Length: 232
Figure (cartoon, rainbow, N blue to C red):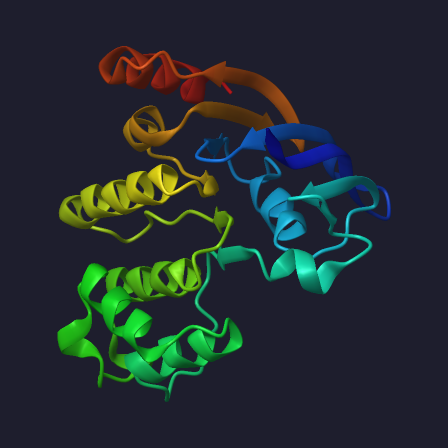
């Protein structure tokens, strides 16, 4: 059963086309990875799917709910991680997660669990402004996981993560896939795309230029994706 349907979605700013007639379908437990250089349209697409930016044309449906017709019900099903950290700097880590947990009607125990999974339990009283880049990324990732969202949208989530936490990120996403979440994220790390992505979509100038289904052989897929990434 298809749960996410994106049909001919586009985004224009006056004369500039940021996204051109993008379509995809995804079922429970599928992961789609967006690849491409700066200005390819990856963030534009994620902003639309997250309900942050309205598409110029096209439709988005999640579990039968239309983004355009019932935005509130639609966004209640998603978790979104932006590529930049805009949180209140004087909040501490626990306050930050508790704020998002309250918005998603998620209990305190879930916050404690997320803190442990993202390795910030011992930093829960630390002010956000004092966190390293990698810790901020983990915190942003943690808030996206709250509430067991049906759709996870992550914009360059591995930026600033060391190898250990890149591996942990992949493991956490695998867990979410097994529990039925649909995952869409952008990355420049082709080995990560090869390990976790069921479908890898290469974009350029707002359009899809290559769509690859994962063969399951990580080494071969990584090499193939690296070659494509250099060409596009």
